[in-house]
Amino acid sequence: MPATIVIGAQWGDEGKGKITDLLAERADVVCRFQGGNNAGHTIVRDGEEFKFHLIPSGILYEAKTCVIGNGVVIDPHILFGEIDALRARGIGADNLRVSANAHLIMPYHLLLDGAAERQLGKFKIGTTGRGIGPCYIDKVARVGVRVQDLLDEKILRRKVRVALDEKNQLLQLYDIGTLDPDQVTDEVLAYRERFEPHICDASLLVNKALDDGREVLFEGAQGTLLDIDFGTYPFVTSSNPIAGGACVGAGVGPTRIDNVVGVAKAYTTRVGEGPFPTELFDDAGAALCEVGQEFGTTTGRQRRCGWLDLVALRYAVRVSGITHLAITKLDVLTGLPVLKVCTRYKAGRKMHDEFPLLQTDFHHAKPVLEELPGWTDDLRHCEEWADLPETARDYVQFIADFTKTRVKFIAVGPGREETIVLPRSIGRGGAV
Ligand code: GDP
Ligand code: IMO
Ligand code: MG
Image (cartoon, rainbow, N blue to C red):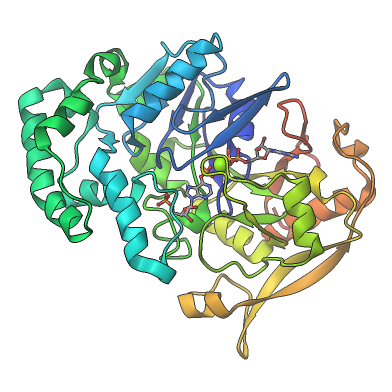
């Protein structure tokens, strides 16, 4: 597996951190390619829990090179906070490299994120409030501040002044007051010394590693249905979490990618606003939330829970060319007598076998659910396919067959070791 992309196949929080950490054992380089500290990736190693927002999930193996690609937006305060927290736990970050072309989340981005949400009122997106959208807006508007600008104070001061000329008017409109350009510049410049040893040409680094036959893992944040182009727009994030985002956000060509691992929970969750056809409001939903501990890693918000949406999962397979699925949190379904999966949507009188093209259809979509038998055995001690109860195997096989995709990993607990890796002969989807 020389170049493997790990992406979320749902609305985020699928367990990408855990799967990346697992795969990182074999990798030489682990590279984040989009998003920022809206992400919260959890790794449990030897019973110890780590939560990363910006640092790639390979950092726990100190011999690996970890890279933050150009497609990521970086809040310096969060980045160095994370590095310090790791140091305090005895883990160094000397092997962390940061693309000179990555954009910086500036103090005004945070203010504007909050203000825009307040302005939207009941139409709000439910963002994480971390300044992600406003930072990507500036990137596309070509008034962003990049990591490399820290190396040229004159340019940095000019850029911040130009940006604030406009932002201050907006901030006044939102009744927030104004920011002083020199003060803002000084605030970010304070991080220059700490940034310097980490700054690199990330695309060059990653491509050289591939040229040398080394293994590179690309770690996505968020998930397919939060993708700015392919997600449930406008209730999405402002980047491309799909596999194609790795090429743009790390500077690698699509011809270099060998595998795409799509991570999906055995059910579905979503944080923030927006449509969610299989959402549950009953005891089954409450059970998923409680057993799955479905509270956001970044904002602590309760995640909305629902049945597995296979139409959306098959869509994720399509838009990212997923070659392997990792099904996580199968253990959370234990004890539910009947499991339901969505295989079609009904919107008005229309039936949808595929993810609907029109946003209105998705907003009105009612799930057509198929029932599968559950199991009562605790799965957390299962180490291989044969250890799973038959109904659990049938459930996973149903996913593989419906999506025509091979299931490679089944997670049955948060720990690194609580993962079943399927041999080639099983977990194949129909017609694969
Ligand atoms: P990410 O954003 O995709 O990396 O996912 P998060 O870390 O935000 O959320 C996933 C949560 O589920 C974390 O608390 C993980 O420790 C936990 N988790 C991951 N896989 C499993 C699993 O198979 N079973 C259980 N019970 N928890 C899991
Ligand atoms: P990981 O990487 C789940 C959601 C927010 C909101 C929308 C837009 O841990 O899976 P933003 O702050 O990005 O502008 O918010 O996207 N969101 C996530 N939901 N997991 C995440 O990351 C998310 N990152 C953003 O809740 O609905
Ligand atoms: Mg998360």
